[in-house]
Image (tube, rainbow, N blue to C red; front, side, top):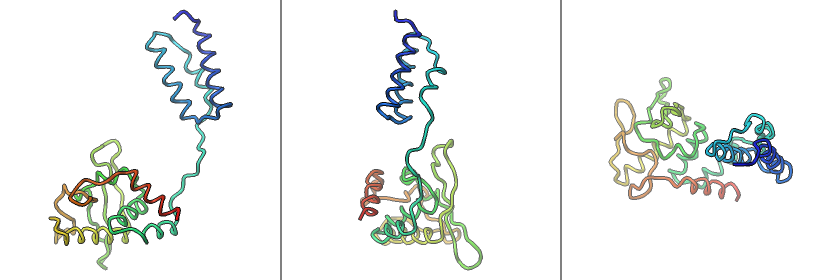
Length: 203
């Protein structure tokens, strides 16, 4: 490249400022743009002052409010859900897990934990078990644990070969999925779940 590096840097900075102030693009969009530009020039052996250029991107500001579902919204979802849907809603609401974690959870990732001597219990759930870097353990609520068992009992009545261990209360076989579709097709179209939730909440 014959163009002076300083001129290239000035043009990149000018573009960033235009994207930020005129086009009002998000920090993420600008960040993606600069990453692509940096990669292009690196591949062409052009050394840019990245630190200087990055200063013009500004700071990553959250433009939306992140919040949990309200009790009323959860109740609204539960009122129109079938057993499987209730498991999905209560798992996410009580454990905080993301919808993307649901498809990978198997029965071996659920461990029944008894609370006191009143026969009450919850489930200890291992999330992202296949990914050591992101793996963590969480617990559901008493209500969620009850609904999970009701859902498993329903599947059992419809002929699925799952059973509850008499001693531990855990469900078997270990490799069976927590959530399934009819004909044992692996759940879940994730966007479909979220779309359903949003449609219910918008009614």
